[in-house]
Length: 207
Image 1 (tube, rainbow, N blue to C red):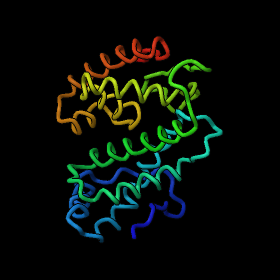
Image 2: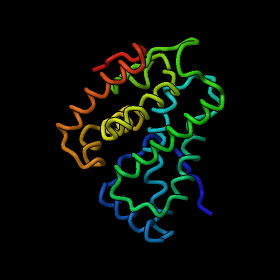
Image 3: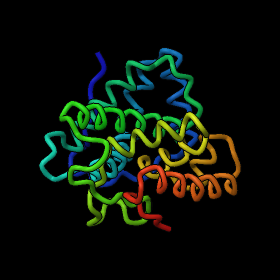
Image 4: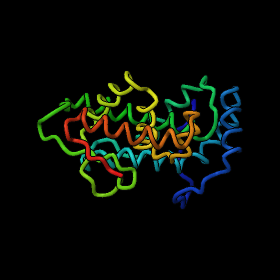
């Protein structure tokens, strides 16, 4: 049975491992090499924690789920998805981010959050300020809006998901989606404007 990732003693933010090495381990894991998974775990833990903290920045301090638990839950689901043909490091972290979003949205829906009204808070789609002192958004409303956008333009929805939730750079997002940096930049701006209208002014158009 796969173990949840654990930080090494005295571990802070892990230095980013060589991309090609992580990719090689991901390929080995997908091909059934359990030793590759064992070696991969400590290499990706730090980045998974960073992504989890980014997701939790959208939640209130009283949220029952903490970053470590979110990492562990997402990691176990990733292990169960071993049939995925991992392309590279960015693909892995993009999938992890999507799973974290789904876990938090499901928890929010279970708590009965309303899509609109009822203490609605402003959402700031600004990747530079997420994780600061911004007011947590209505995650369910944002999730619904992104799902609606995906019906119209799946790529733009994925750009928002990867950048806003996953914290991927423009370049990493381009790599995952196999599009140009210019296309990511354009999609990001247009998607924010669409979400602004969809959420009826609850999203501010951050730079």
